[in-house]
Amino acid sequence: MFVRRIAVVGTGYVGLTTGACLASLGHDVVCADVDAAKVERLQRGEIDILEPGLAELVAEGMAAGRLTFVLGATSAMRHTAEGPEVMFLCVPTPMGVGGVADLSIVEAVVEEVRELLPPGCVVVNKSTVPVGTAERTAELLGRDDVAVVSNPEFLREGSAVYDFLNPDRIVVGGSQQDAAERVAALYARLGAPTVLTDAPSAELVKYAANCFLAMKLSYVNAVAELCDRLGADITDVTEGMGYDKRIGQAFLQPGPGWGGSCLPKDTSAMLQLADAADFEFRLIRATIDTNTRQRQRMVEKVRLAVTGKRGGSLSHKRIALFGLTFKAGTDDLRDSPALAVAALLRQAGADLVGYDPALSQDNPHPDLTGITVVDDPYLAAKDAEAVVVLTEWPEFRSLDWSRLAELVSRPTVIDTRNLLDPAVARRGGFEWIGIGKS
Ligand code: UDX
Image 1: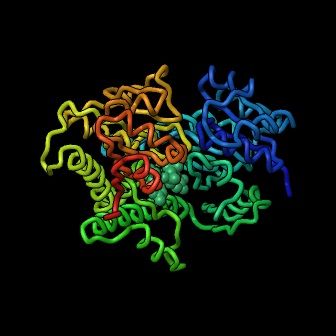
Image 2: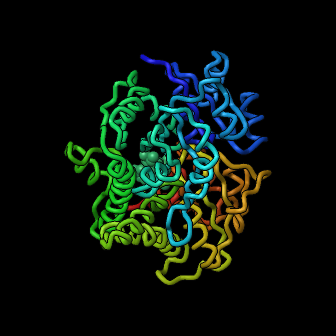
């Protein structure tokens, strides 16, 4: 395998994972960021992101001299006399006005490195960007001797290192076949199936995959609602569906709706993309609407459980929320379905006390306004009219549910993730209410 000189611009969770993993595959990697304080922390081996295995890989790469951190893209270009052979763009592409991806950071980096890139260098876009961005980047670069390819990432938060090193596939797209092959070769040791294509197709793979996942979840949540109404059991239904190899068991767990930094952003972007192409992508619209409705549905479950009535008032009812992050294994609150449900409960007048294993009461986050965050689940449950499990943290299973039952004012748990063992909760004295579990 060829060892390549690689520059990674952006040390967020995609950039840092990419840099550290490529170094672990034997490449020489320099990672750049514009945040001086962050770069200094990284140079000391301090990682801000909660990502299993990442700190170890960064330490290993630094110790082996294969991973370096520098301030700014320009420094990354000048890190070696020859300059990088491949440059990865891993900068944020936030959702701008009307769900359109904001490419200003990508453009600023391209402008900065335009004249510094050595001839023959390949610029790789890893950020999720609208179809056509690779072509636009090539135009902005205006360099015939530098190729631009798209190489979308498929990393899940909380298992990004694992996903990088055990990919289901590698997708690389560009108009110059040799440049795309050179990028694919960086991953050769991983032995994953590789799709070599043009840039627009590679860019679309990311949206098409994430939207499909969102659609799968909205579908499961809708089937769970039907289970509630028809007296069926969603766990058995999804198990029965999942044995069909064309469907698979993964990503069939119902919940309070999907969230996080990717699926909401990518479904909105897909709608924009389709709109701009004069195509009404109704399936994606329905996927998003079903997700919005799912959050409301969770509130209605709480309302019915607490008041005994469909239209009952939640005003000044104390509700304990177990889990606030968008999924377990992360401290990320971006587009968290738990927070969306919390906001609706608050609108309905409820008083909210929250506990999450990844959050601390001493470190208040602006997104948690309106929720009293405590560091102890038993304190959160004290005098609550209902406990609502919103994130699938496994530790909730092993809480002392008998002790919780003594602390609450009404022993009812609404388990929006079907996480708990109902028998354990019931033995503890709780009424257990799941989703799609009539
Ligand atoms: C996702 C994609 O999985 C990943 O490939 C892509 O690169 C980025 O977006 P991530 O956002 O980290 O990854 O989270 P993921 O594990 O996919 O979960 C997304 C949301 O769906 C979470 O809110 C999660 O709780 C929910 N979910 C997931 C379910 O409700 N049920 C499931 O069965 C799986």
